[in-house]
Length: 105
Image 1 (cartoon, rainbow, N blue to C red):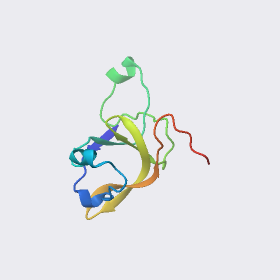
Image 2: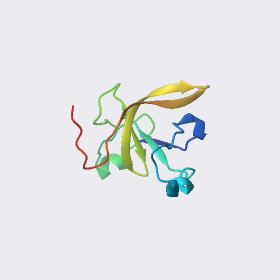
Image 3: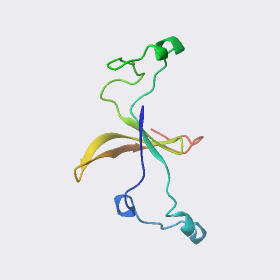
């Protein structure tokens, strides 16, 4: 289960580009697919074929846990549902380090 969204405006995100090479400037306005993943689970083909309204699929994540934020299928952060100007939004709680980078706790 996922919900896809794109950034509504550049003012919603940090706008500082200090320390980045000027050659990256053309990339700053490229739109990226963002997914907020509520949870994941597995079911058999048999269970899939039996799905109907009001069926329940159990997720691996516990209730009340943070949602996963994915950009182009890469996990980049976790967060919680928030309301911003009468729309559903996501408040980032933790930004994930790049793959292969270890972070000291």
